[in-house]
Length: 251
Image 1 (cartoon, one colour):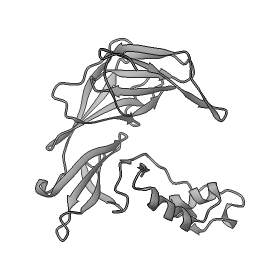
Image 2: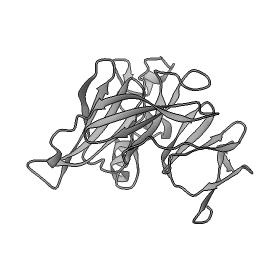
Image 3: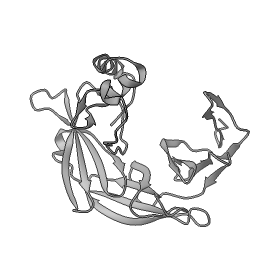
Image 4: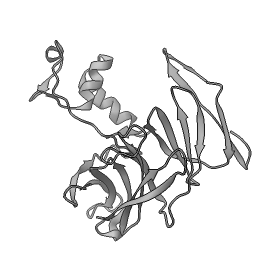
């Protein structure tokens, strides 16, 4: 909301099976949020296209604008995320990290002095792994968490130039090497989002009676979704494919 010169932010909080709107509003110079927010120290952070950050504390329901500019020479391919390796936050757990990618290099910045004098500090430069640029139809940095960086590229197929292979590369910061993690299914051709997932082998009483186990692990996400809504995993997989044309998927 707002005018051509200013933006007014309002917030909604979900709890108790319903949404409510706090009285908190934030008015500042107009700029658009980029991508999804990042959660840190009890607050959600939205990066805006002028480099500033809108922060909303879920406990105090207080909103504020963090006045900060992008580093010089920043690429249009940007990502704001958390660094789980090098603590920069108030609690010493995680820190806000900015990724800027060009065709040659990927730059990593860390946010310091978030309360008093916020600034992006250069941390690392990574050689981009992109292969044959002539065959690329799309590429982007999708995720980063301090240990690994995930890059996605869509390459035109040699036998069918109108179709693409969706390849996911991972850069391991401990070895400074790129590896191919895998590919995204062709039928899943919508916008994607990536998040960190840690498999668990924890035992739940009675779960093995209703779910097929594969070496002590649930084999797929559709199996978990089937447990939640009571459908068979096969039906869930069919529903995912039907909905892929209009929904985002999480990998």
